[in-house]
Length: 191
Image (cartoon, rainbow, N blue to C red):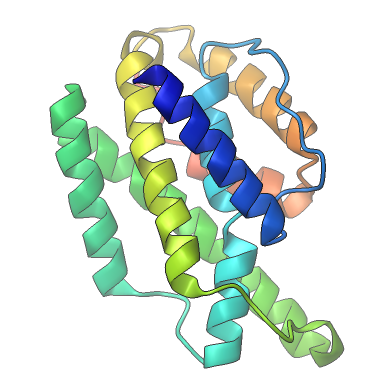
């Protein structure tokens, strides 16, 4: 099962690279923290924001989509229950993740309004991006279940900080994405 998940994450990374969400050649370092894989999945999910924003920009779609948010929260709650993770924890974590992703999208829209010449001329299909997001959501819940003892421990904050630094450096995250990663992971530690 773990091998299948790792292959799926690699396939998602390839897809994200193809849609421009990951920098070319983004390599994963060996985990330095128990939370590296969870934070890496969260970063990959955040990086879908550019493709999603481009799609919404071109179609005139709204950034916030309450129906989609409810669909995502229902799915991660079900996954959380199956993984033995408290549903309220999953809801808090994924609400932060969604808010951070929307924040990146709003930022992109702002830049494109200031300089329309930088706006996208094409975008991947929104359904393809959402499929990637759904896969990453499953991976994140699985990682939360595996790392539940760390997430509840007094050492969580240090492990989370180390994981964010490792992932941000490995993925070459800029200041916007580093801020988004901080926002997306703010509810992780319960210890």
